[in-house]
Image 1 (cartoon, protein in one colour):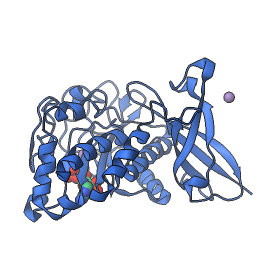
Image 2 (cartoon, rainbow, N blue to C red; image 1 turned 30 degrees about the vertical axis):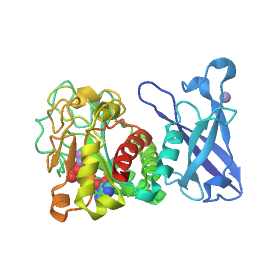
Image 3 (spheres, protein in one colour; image 1 turned 135 degrees about the vertical axis):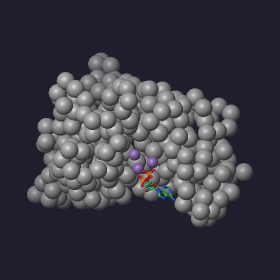
Length: 340
Ligand code: ADP
Ligand code: MN
Ligand code: MN
Ligand code: MN
Ligand code: MN
């Protein structure tokens, strides 16, 4: 008996990494324990992760789940990339998150990430007429009906695939621009939300492929008066889930000293194109936070002020952000401040 394992990894494409994958046929039946899956190799010179003369790179399994595309016993295997001496590759941002997540695990940080994305049919977003524009924004967000909704059959299939894989997906909605959608992952721990989000992204591309549609995380897929695509990052620690003082400490900490720029410059390529101050964003170079405010960098949801506990929403990350990076930065900044 054999099964198929789809080994998935994050490459070295600049400025935004891409997902790659290849299939390994394995004997027996799969283990749900990732530590029992073998390491594998690949040609790093074809993924911007090596020069041609010494191009072998190592794939080390770090997360596995059922493969909802192939079904049966087949599995998906998310990997970290290493050099052959088993030092983490420069593109391996998960390796940088691991020690930070461990250091602050006692504060029980959890994240819910809202992944926005846009479907494309060739060169134009799904729902955009050839050579022109659809009706202006207003009716599409959480809409219903063939005049407002484009790609729902793909979105439903993707949601089912994420659920079959056992990912912590928590919802979906149609977004402000035609062909634009969102799914949410979490709230779960920093490594979990990031691993699950990368697999959910892979499943999004793979599911849409069968419909001859591409999905993009481009933060500003249509220039002009159209909403960009973000990845609002919702965050809490145990103390924040128990009291308001910790909520304020976390929101303040993100505004201190060089923190706003340290964060924003790592929140996804092209962030200044999206964080203009228009279209429900705050300007990229001014930090602000506020209750209910969708024009602030960080929003404290209305319900959180009401309950005097809960979580904060960092609205700045682009759709193309690396979740290993945004969760590391937020845990580092907020948990350091909360520790004091
Ligand atoms: P909105 O579109 O109004 O900003 P969503 O419902 O799309 O809100 O997303 C809210 C996110 O907040 C979800 O991903 C959810 O998992 C996350 N969330 C809820 N409670 C917490 C919490 N205590 N800590 C971290 N994230 C949370
Ligand atoms: Mn070959
Ligand atoms: Mn949302
Ligand atoms: Mn949204
Ligand atoms: Mn949001």
